[in-house]
Image (cartoon, rainbow, N blue to C red; front, side):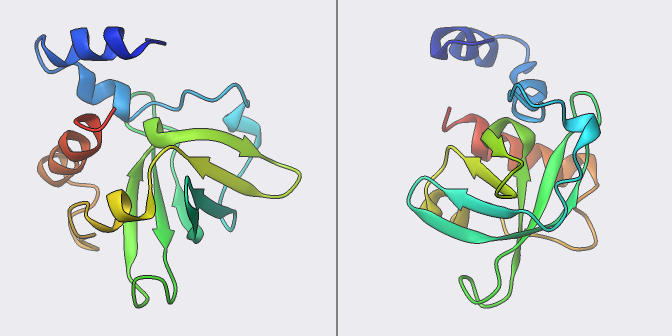
Length: 129
């Protein structure tokens, strides 16, 4: 799924697009890189550092500690929002604005691994592809 029309086609189907938003689309071999501690840059500036990164097929995500940006809160970012990773500078670039990230469903420390919660987050980000 490389084009916007492919993603729109997926979204209009049986809901399979949710899988797309949870899959890394970067060329970097993420199995060899631990993203924990990397900085995260939205399209309009920095949002924090990665606390946790998973590499599950169709279920990958980043938990980002936003520090003072959103008063010390965390956000859950599906892997599909990752645009690129610069391993040299330890920076992950995402294809969302700070406002889009800030307006996402609030991070829930107790439920972020839960399918229902992740479904809400996935729908939010998938609708913005």
